[in-house]
Structures are given as C-alpha cells and as structure tokens.
Image (cartoon, rainbow, N blue to C red):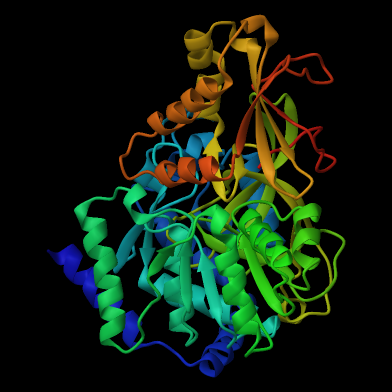
Length: 541
C-alpha cells in the first residue's frame, strides 16, 4: 500500500506543479547553465552515494578487484577531467557490455565472476515511480522505473528543444504505441508538464492487442484521472495503424492551417509514412517538425521527410537514461547529428568484438550524471556505436557548452524497423535452429538481410536457400513471426505490439536465395547491406 500511496502522491504533485511554456523555458536555461558548470561535482556526488556508498552496487566488485576507492576517482576527475577518468576506469576493467548488463553473459574480469540481474542497476533513491518497458524486446524488454521528479527534469529539456526549433507552443501529436511502451506515456506527461499538452495520441497498435496486468491498467487509469482532476487532461491513445498514416497527415495539415508550426513525435519510419501520405493527398506539411526517435534517421529518411517542406529533428535516447542527445537548428553533414546533453550523460567508447557480425568497433559506454536517472550507469554499453567528437556550433546548444556531438548512430546488438527492436539472441536461435528444424536444411541455409528500400523504409529479407527444397513462403513467414512472439517471456511484452507493427508494415519478406557471405567468406545469421562508418563493413539498427 505504501508503494501505491507514493505513486499517487508523486503523480498528484507532478500534475499540480505543471508550468507555463514561458516559465519552463526560463527554468530550463537556468538549470542547464548551472548543471554544465557543476558537471564534474554532480558526477562525484552521485558516484560517492550511489556506487561507493551503496553496498549492492554492481560496480563494487570491479572497483574492489583493482582497489579503486572513491578518493582515487575524485583525484582523477580533479586532475584529468571526467571523460579521462571514465577512460581510466574502462582500462581497469570497470565497465559493462550490453550483454553483461542484460545478464546474457557472465561478467569475467580482474579475477571476479558474476551475473547481472535486471534490477541491479536500478536507482535505489527513486520515490514516486511507475514502470514501463523499453522498446528492445528481449525478455519483455528492460524494465524501467520512472520517477516523477525525473520526468520534471526531462520536461525542461523538451522545453529547450522545442523552443530552439521555434515550436514551444505549437500543437503536438504523438504516434507511439500504447502503454507499457515508454515513449507515448512519458512524452505525454512531459509535454503536459511544460504547459503544451499533446493534442492527439495516435497509436500504431490497438490496445486490445497488448495485454498488461491489472496493476499497469490501474496505474494508467490513475495517471489520466489525476490529470483530468487538475485541469490538464491528457490525450488518450487512439488506434491508427501503420497504413493509417493519412490520419496523422490530415491532423498536421489542419494544425498548420491555423499555426505556423506543428510537432509530430514518432519513429523515423512512421514519420516517412506520414510524409508519403501527405504527398499522395496533396496535404500541406510545410512548417511541421518531426521529432524522430527509436531508429536511425538515415539520409534517405531525412530527404523523404524534408521533401514535403517538413523538418526532421533527431532525438536520440536510451530507455535506461532517457533522451540524451538531440538535433539543433543548424545544417550539418550528418543526417542524425545530435548534441549530447552532457550535463546528464557522459559517453566514452570501448572497443568491442560483435558476435555474429564478424566486426570490431568502438561501442558507446554511458555514464549517468542525473541524480533522478532510472538506472545508475557507469561505463555501461547499450549496443550502440557511432561518431563521437567535439565541435563548435552556432546554436543554443553550443552556447550552453553542449559541444559533444554524436552522429551516424547505429546498433550492433539489435535489428530495428518501424521503431521496434529485437535483439540478436532471438534471431540466432530462430535462424540457426528452429527454422531448419521445421522446414529442413542446416543453420547456414537461412539468413536475414537488412536493407533500406527506395522510400526509406527498413526491411528484413529472410533468405531461404534453394538447398532447402520446396517450401511455402507464407508458412515460413508465419512461423518466423510466431517464433519471435513466442520467444518473449512476458505476456505484457513489447513484442506483442512489435510483431503487430512488423506485420502491418510487411517488415519481413521471404526470398528464395542463397545466403550471402562476408568479405572474409563467413556466412553469418545477419547481413546488412549498407556501410555506415569507418568502423565496420556492416552495421545494424
């Protein structure tokens, strides 16, 4: 009962303390300036209490093995700075790969061996929480506990980003799946908090296709009821499948007939679908700002969006740390160029050999600097890699000191389409074991090829070797999708909505062809057609 009381009390305070847009942007500027100035001190205070002072911290065994005390870390930061200190920790073996973080493989370093559990990285100091699931669908995705104080902090970044792009008070629509997926409910709460609530929440998946337990149903109803009580009703999700993109395009066109701008927050591929629907119906999208997330904003996708007169703004985040980087209003050569919110997150890179891809690359390692973060991260990989550098920029991010930039961001750990991700573990099992057992052939007779089509949509070609003999391609596809769904342990998994979205978009297509080998002659479960940067011949997300 104490848990439910804290949830309701935190929600009530959050709804009651909503801001006006002008107040939110003024507070955001003051807060970001203060945090940049106090960045290293904030990190040390968080590390002292939440890592060195927390007996169940997963980082303590790695630190103890190298006899690294808090005084050592404090001295390093004072002498060499934060990023150099994080690199020193990484060289001493104080880091976690994404597979270690998710408990897929044991941590074996510096004479210590242990296996991580999902809750080990939870921030123990959160008070008023509700729970969502990340978009990556391994064992129902990562469980994320969201604190209302954290949402307050994050909403200020939304205010800053919207204001930078001239749309702080513009009408907003979301196109995200229903709860327990994180983006839809979280962004709805944040936008309402800064005085510009979402006008429409479109969902690619119908509510009756996603099963959640009574506690989450009750929590969702409570969130909507409390906001109605305090005079700020939230838009309730309404089903608009991937083939109903014209509804979102129509909403945008109507909004733009009354306002100079409007905002649509959605996945990159869903944004392309809206633009295609608008072009087919001759609807105006000039002035629309697409905040795109969940999958790479490739050059092709960006061109498709901008061809309608709209703007594509990359928003990069990980569920474990929220939005951590976003695009500015200046022109850049990279389609997904983002400024790191360096007051809340630090990033270094770690050389990583990727299983199943035959590549070696520099993986991002993330460190939390925000006290309210859902997860406490210290050099933790999330399966992503890409460009990382410092560069001056004549935008408000640059003026604040947000001079660390990311670009060409991809994932080596999961395949992404329509904002839905499935990690490689399920694919390996299905490709190498379950399909051969069902339809014949060997583990090397099936392969997934990821590629982007002429409209900018990502597709997976499921190759079935002619060696297998005669098969019904529709049956192979149905079996593949069924195995994906069955591989998820929880009945409320994001995979339920994920598989539904992939079916709607014809994301997976069966082709009879021999699997393709790499330049080194290997036949891997995956091949990715387009090179993305100098680190690898192929990259995935």
